[in-house]
Image 1 (tube, rainbow, N blue to C red):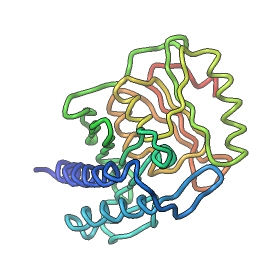
Image 2: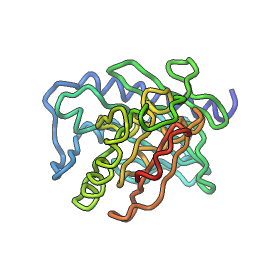
Image 3: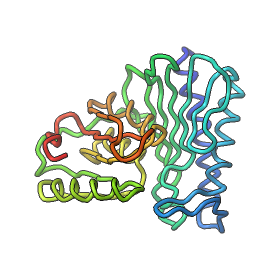
Image 4: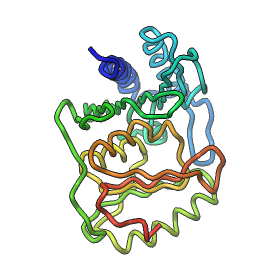
Length: 255
């Protein structure tokens, strides 16, 4: 087993364990740690990340972990893991079965993405990828769609967690919605990226997103033939604007 395979195997095992945890608790009474204006933080998010962290550090104690819940942990080794323990927490809280676990690993210095895993425990779908390889869905190769015109496209637009980001999103959505076949708002950035990587969606745009939301999916889209553009968000320091596409869709002029 080479280094990337070892990383991927660990990420997959951890994603499945966390996915089992959150699926088991789906529909149960949940402890809310923080109820924000446009977001929810659950005790289960913290528990899921703790499980993932422990499983990764048991195999790679020198590695660092950057997670949505709890910030940086681990060692100062050359690999950094990027973890979203429940991507789609608001969906999860309201009983909407569209959420996932997202885990990526990258070189700490160069920031090169090495592996990614996105696991949807409700659909039993595991998306995996290694740098330089092919994106897989439950072990079978997938790729981005070949749709090249806006009139053919299905696009998801994310609406972020501040008034400034929402206002930009509304204007962008209006420009895009008139041109495409359909728009969708699904509530999980990681699954949006996975869906582009396997051809279900053609593009995803959001003004204000965090690294853990899109790291695993970025590698999947790129290895599936797509394109991902990120740049610092104009609405919140430390977050990013993202436009991910199948690599063929000319959406840039509508942004």
